Length: 242
Image (cartoon, rainbow, N blue to C red; front, side):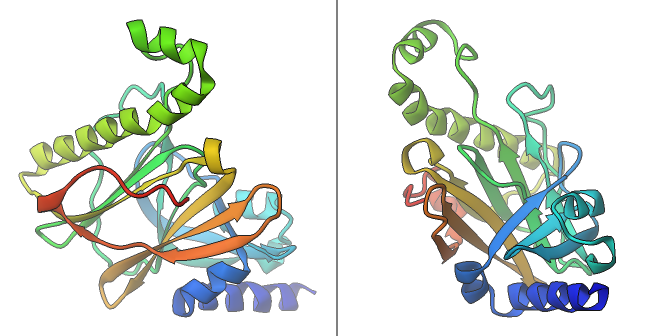
């Protein structure tokens, strides 16, 4: 079985890289076990169990039911989520070129925002921010949100747009570079009950990014190719079809 598990994992990883949209439309993808607060590169474990491709640390993959002998590694980039209480939540984020990294993953979104950018020097960055919770806003906002969960959920994306913009500005200030284009993905799990997973695939030195949504109740999957937008027209909003 160990050999077959490896074969299954290698095939799934190959399909993710080379037939991305079709793969995401038919196979669940879950990334996890990512450590730290900023993007890092290295060896990522991958493996298939019960119709799901798991990507992350080897411990995460084996804890997800993949036999240790069935785990296949690949070079990739991983972007952990910055929590709503992280001290360096708005700090500059690292930038990366393609190198030998084949995939780029972040953890599943259930209300978070992910900002992906390509910079003028050709490098790429990604930051993943958790929304603030009840009681973490100030003054009138806290009062209103305490009265209505609907208002709170609808407003979280607005506050996250401000925060991912702050991270972008901090990165530009630190590096002296400016963004060329961006992708902003804001999950609206609270209103759609769709889990959202973002993944990037490197092709010839450039990164293409995709998302997979999964309905919490039915398990139905949908896949999307995410569209780059010019930074000169930056408006931190993307239609919330997720």
